[in-house]
Image 1 (cartoon, rainbow, N blue to C red):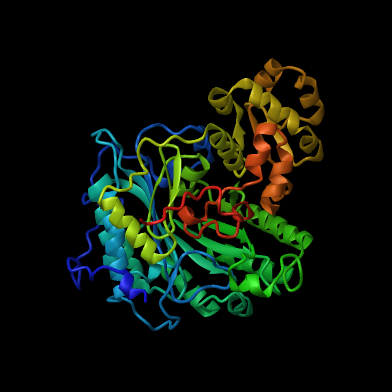
Image 2 (cartoon, helix red, strand yellow):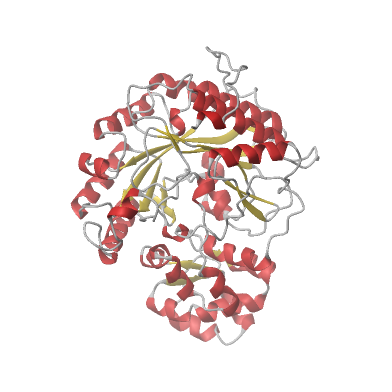
Length: 518
């Protein structure tokens, strides 16, 4: 059934491709339209999160959805194509993959972009899924080649790929590195065999350690390890073991997600949130606090609700999202943000094929002349900023939306400042006491002179945000925001798996402008 939805197999991809070296040391194969950007260490600081209204220039980030998995995990509601669960199976010539990549490249080529010669090249590319490591390197090269031809890719661009244990060996890893991939996101999820089986993962703990060894032996310096908490039958001892095992693996980045039971998944049929064998809210909160304390003590900076990194290794691609920046997205179910407009592609292959055809025929052009809703932008800024350790930059927010709105926000946060869930910081990042805040609350000018940032405390404030979007809506009672906050942002399509378990993404309708193929 799937095969009928695909175009003919790519005929231009050689069976034994020669991989050009596109690493930082030798990357002349990619067009360099602007001076070199700083390295990962120089340009990945949370200090970059300081503006809210993206410039009108073209996006410099691209998300690429590769939907293929060996099997569907019990918690997953992403648009995927299950290929088969055998760990010995190879997919070098699988027509489901080759035809999809051809369709994906057609979408990239048909995408409308500005005609300015000054448009910067892509600075980040993120291959999400699905399990992108199932895709043969020659096809990953095809996609990168198409992106470079269309937009240009900066010579030291951060190029990330999600990989699952048991889906790659040292040869594939080396080939991907030669193509220019320089960041890996490893989907471990747990270090206990019983938990991996309980959530339907296709890999084993043995394969986890093999994957970690391969990453190390191939010299991957920038890599993330993903874990999920609040799994069925998961104990605090198990979670502690997973955190400690992750630290011993020495990744430069760790992502920690709280399980969310989605309606149309196997877990959605088996379990009710908060009831055994799932942990209740108090137990889930304790797991979150354990992660924050354990990883922070191990030298990881808790720079975003679900993200921890060594200094200088924050994910630059994801920082684009937290800054409310513009980005391209390509592939099944992916969502882009261009010119202030968010747009999701169809989740089913047949409709996605029709979408690409209509894009080529000029029937559809959602990337130009879009007008984003100002209230949505205000809401997005607050929601995204409060996900980060930097918090909401009030100077930038005031310049974008006005002083009166900042004053209303500060007044609304008062009870949460007193409870310790919200911190008000001065320009030196010093937290104001409740008494200091009360003394300046009487006037907008005093607020403007004294308060520079609003952020959630770690971990209690982050928990208030991460527990549910409804908790965040209680934080902000400003009339014009309440309705928006009750409809949380759906980010999982364009992040491609990285933010699957974050509870701010439970409802998916608000950011979806789903295109129905004509």
